[in-house]
Image (cartoon, rainbow, N blue to C red; front, side, top):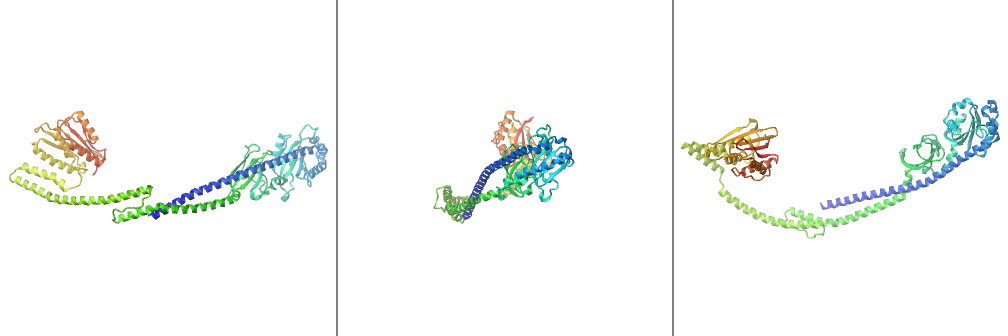
Length: 597
């Protein structure tokens, strides 16, 4: 048993230690991972601010170049009263406009193409190598009904940025590998001396140039970086295939410019941290998806150190626990051995080594108990010896019940011979009373047997009082087989006779009734004696409720009432028992019992 206890204690200590150390290790691991995340977020925030500055600088540069482009003399001549020009005049200006566009793109190679649209004539422009002229009908179907054109007119003369537009939108001949996504910067324009805005300048930047601003410094293992609009559509990405797709994270429109934050999310079954930053231009968001495994790689060394410390600590706890528990359990082993000796009959054994702790208290009490048991055994032997002597002495004076029955039977036949019928009836009634006392040890009997016993008792009593006691029963047959405690009615009747009579010649009537329901049986004993006043009745009931021995002020000891009431409560509880109720004449006592058939 002690070995099992030692093993259990070691296991408990190990389990608790493992749980505490595992929790501490996980906390340290999570804390360090969070610290690295915060540090990386700070560095990334600085990087985002720099990229925001670079992209903002690019937008400002395009804004400046657009104004410079519009000041060109040939462009001004092209724009002057452009709404009044015929289609032939519009086409004649195409070559001049294209030469200006080619020279301009040649000086600023990050510009992909430039287009000028006329509301009534269409569009002219293109890239350095391609020139395209759209007529009004074609542009009416594509550009003049588009959202970018509407915003350009509404926000004149501000520069408007639009993304997600492909090269084939402006030039349908660009397909396949020649096609791609553009960043379009548009503004409504007019000639210097023209009062009406009748044209739109579109300067396009290849999306790949925008992504090169942040892709060159991006390590693919550190995650993907891309730019998305407020709807979550990818505008520019380090991976070209992602442009035009829907971002895993939709930032929304309720963030201020320069807003910064991060969240943890799942993508393709991988846990990742999404860091976002709202740019100051275009309503765009710069996002970076960082796999959380990257942080795990960064703290791998710390994790290995924690694992080493964890294993060493577990071994140290195991060794220390083993020797410490071995020392603690040693007195318990001795106590266990002495208890086994005692179970084999060796009394008076004691444990010599008593430690100065709670276990020592237990051992001292065991020693005292062991020595006390020797004394108790000796005293018990003496008591048993005296008991045997008393039993032998009692056997010498024991009266056999059969001898008593035979004697009563002999007296009865002697009375029959001399024709003394009253003596015969008295002896028969007495025998019927004594028979259940000696023949049965059961404390319960049927109500039928109890009434029969009571009938024999009253026969004997009437011999004494010259038949002045009248006994009537009002008990339905359905209650006759109910189980009741033996000898509960005789003390009540005896109390009625003792307290109700005024003289030896005074006649008294006693009535027994039974009623009830499925749960309770109510017996009542009513006499026609002198009765009692209300105060005496209340005092009797109060003493019976407190289980005190009542003493009647009318007559009788009342000890029988207390005995019956206490027996009923011992059998069935405080909800049952006896109590007195007011009666028109005499006294009435109620007995409440549960129904047991």
